[in-house]
Image (cartoon, rainbow, N blue to C red; front, side, top):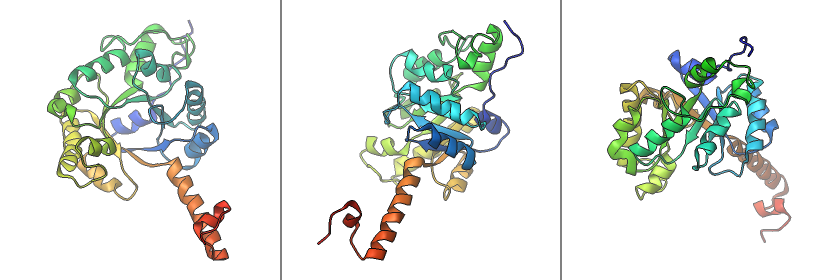
Length: 275
């Protein structure tokens, strides 16, 4: 095998290990041109794409990774819960990280780490014949070591069930980042969308505090407006927006401008009338 190949270093990990904050943007739209635009223009460190809520298949994910890598931007793939293959396939496509939703307890977290980290941390299935292993041109020992060091797992806390074992989960060797998801968490505690609910507020603080205590990275969703508050709380990975939000706001602005110029109601934009 050739010896002059290395795995692409993670931009997110580089920033986090330097004590900086890494910023992400969520992508729902599948076209890799959107990925390229976001990677080239937005200035973020990471593009978070989704296979849990969005009907992306692996061919879509692969093209998004290609587009982002061209601009040294990481791709984080939120996987659908399934077999170990569903977890590791984005890594073999050279995604920098994978996000695993709805981690429900300590045993669940241990199994995820076991499946996503190589020896000596876990038993991730070993191949090396894909993009992350330079298509068998990265020496085996280097492949294992660099994958464990330059690829990260993100375990989501978005339910009340794991709270009893939260510190034990965060302390696990091989866990890279813990990510608090307020949306599903609010639903899980019977208060959908109540962002000021005391348990939600306390859990958000606890996730960041325990991550700092155990030397792990903490992530969550936010905005550019509350980014300073979240980083002060201890979060060092924040997703600050989404492509569909930006597109929706742009299109809504067009609709409003058209309505003002024609004096018609919103429905007139879609070919009907409000009267």
